[in-house]
Length: 296
Image (cartoon, rainbow, N blue to C red; front, side, top):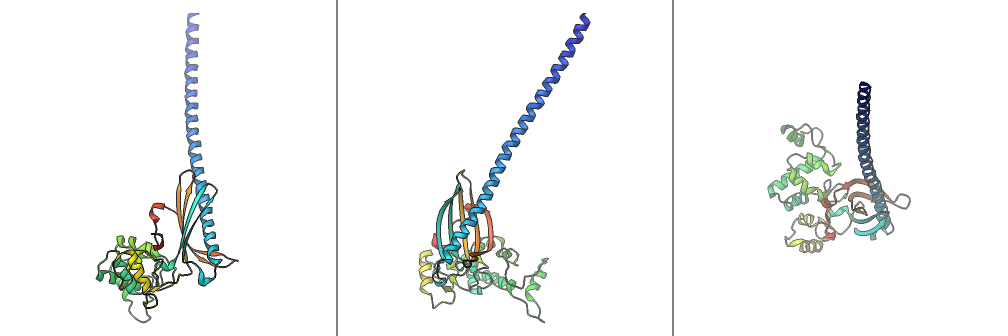
């Protein structure tokens, strides 16, 4: 009897250990599942915000386009701003004509080099940088040596200049001889959508105003007044906007998340209110700042 009781006690102990192991495993599974559910909820919330942000960006473009096409072409504003609330977010929208920027495909050497100088380059270097940009966008002549391509070959680069208009401002990173830190400072002030070789002095940022030849270095307000005074007598300035408009949208969700997007649109008509030329989504809001003169 004593032996039987000992064997039974050992069997009960084994069962107890097995039960404890099963309970531990179940607790671990429950913990893993709770973490999975929490992470899934966070991911779904993030996806919801992303989907909603795209919809709000589209709404801001539509509202901007309707503001522009609702006016006669000659009376359309070159800049503006408005706010609206939709769903779970507040939306701030700013729009400005691309003529406030320097067009890489149209700007003369004087404007290009002037921008480099305004952003810290030495005069001789700035002229060389402008030559490289013009060389990138210029189609080489037939039956003639392509001097620009020779520079790229001599530098050991695995590509040649486009030999055609810039397809994207990001191509500046590929232009031979341009310092990367200078390219980074230039990008917020250039475009390929203006289609003009002049600058709209009423909307341009101070850095762009400083690029205009003969501009007096007496602060943004003084430069703007000086540039505006030259309208009609200076080949580099204008008061006209361009058909292309840059729209910056800042979205603040009720949960505290903030996102920003930037697009360039070409307003159309009632049947097709606008066409998107460029779209950059989910930009860090702090990197946008106020890029055009009227917002400063």
